[in-house]
Length: 491
Ligand code: FRU
Image 1 (tube, rainbow, N blue to C red):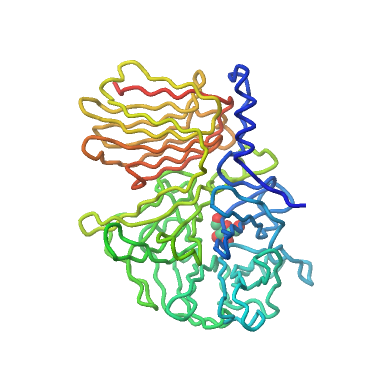
Image 2: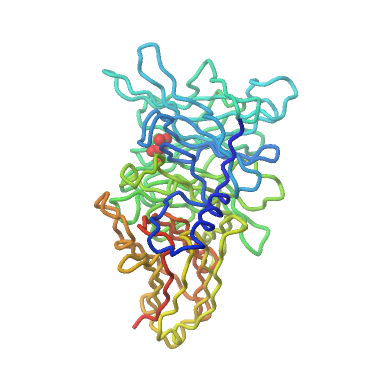
């Protein structure tokens, strides 16, 4: 039977339930209404995101047996519009070896092998999918091994076969993972990391089976903790016909107790990625819950902008967040572009969001908020779009999901230009001591105005400032549904 996983339908039901009674005492649900999450069990990184024949595929790290990390396999969801996702049966499972160790299917990518370069498909078949993933084996005695392996599918990712000569790339290193493969000028390229050497390697291949090392880069930017889930792709520069290459790396957060993501802007000559000179570390998202984002492959030609999706969580506390028989979710997809700010290229992210999200749109002057402006909300799932004039003010404060003392607070201090998000009183926070936190990012107002597009979805808040130039994503676990929004001036 086909299981249609329609989050919007669930959201509609929740809204309907809450409309004819006091919402106050209804305890909150944490399953998001318009962010994808499977029915049950543990998820982490998105994997093998690829478009084929009218469908966007999202594969992802999944434990089929429970809500803790383990037995890593690739699960599968598809969408026609990136808004409503349908959960499909498990795609690529963990396998048992002869000595009863297992091979887990770690993160990686998927490509459409339309020229059948791999020889896996029938002659002339143009819709073969090949997954390139890290095979991870833990053996008693000999320890850990990580290498890159292949699986292929002739039925749009519904069923998969393992390549019988796996692995295809083994350098004898135990932390060597997360291959991201793309087609470039007639050949396949792979970027993959030596995780604990903070080094990315670039390989090429004509058949996905034989790989030749072309170049490496590493120990630049943030290398305080780890390098995982690398990617390398072209991003168009707004208001021009130019593009720049970007390499995204999942690494440490500014606050090194956590993980986070960084990017390098540069050029790729087919063999070598050369990052531009940069000052400091370029962060993709300033929150604590945006990790392992990678791009979709093979997007339809009408899509001019590459698109990424992330695991919305942080390894610092991922295993402890409240579980409803499922743990973990994904960010909304984000379309990417660069803007040229005096010769420096900065990333701009635009979310792809479901059509019927309840939306509140406000245009305000901070100086006129001497009394707090309060909005009563029926649920904890909505979008709040604000344009706030900062003239003659010190800044503003927005309480989200507010119920008594419980609130998630967004503050803008005009003097420091810092937009910060405080989740220390956001509801359930004591499941892990690293969870209650305050994050901030510097946002420069444009003509005295700050624009915010805030997506609240039961247990996630994604904040896009200045039309996607600065982004902050955080999980929150409010205890009550229908928390208020309250906006006031900073005194
Ligand atoms: C990143 C990561 C990857 C690895 C996967 C295992 O979150 O650690 O490096 O492939 O998760 O689930």
